[in-house]
Length: 312
Image 1: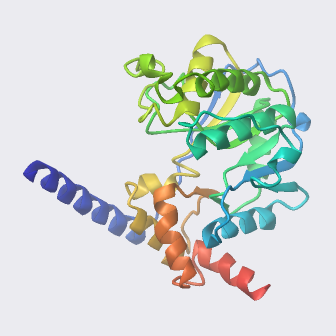
Image 2: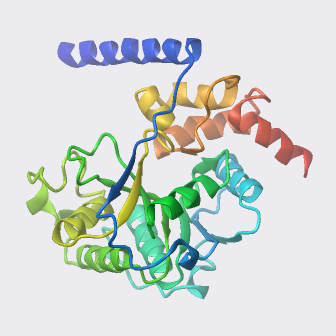
């Protein structure tokens, strides 16, 4: 018990130091691109339809999710925005009967892969906030000759030649070989007799799953790595620690500090990540503070929130 208390105290002190360093120093964003199996692309960037796919399966009003979607509408001029939920998803794909043990996140994974396989485009989790458009990514894809883009997890990746994929932001053309194979492997797991234990044999296989935690929950991560271990695909990656999980890594996943940074801190003369991924733990305090209008109007979220409120 004492060891646990000491460990928690040490981490809290560490997080406070990280926060103080973050707000007092000029930070830099270290983008680490990886282009694995360059030259094997079967399609072109022009084959990717400018369609945004977002799915949010909740009837509750969520200020943060609404703000994330508003950021997409603000920056993605000329894109077709498809905001989906359980009431309209079957206009686009057929949903099977899922295993009772499959979590909502697993159903969302099935939806994203199925949509990208059939239509192509850009899948974005509803809890991703954008500060820029997507030109910088498409420009990089054109430069590299890549036809699919994903982020990779800095924390989960051990092998630089085999990055662990994040699934919350994917750009791909329809019928891309990797998306097809990923979906098929994922379906084997979720439609098995026990989805949560399907990949148990891989738990100690660090060569493939590396530092992926909670294998029973992150089924789509493991299925991706299994597929990538069997076949080569041309994929352009960007580390999520530079865009997406930037604040999570900088502030050691302290949800309260992250919420305060995006709601109160003014990023004057400091680089701002092009996109921010809000995890479930971070969403709760951020949503609560937005609900009670606790924000700086010059902060990352506050500025757009004010504009949104004024346009009502």
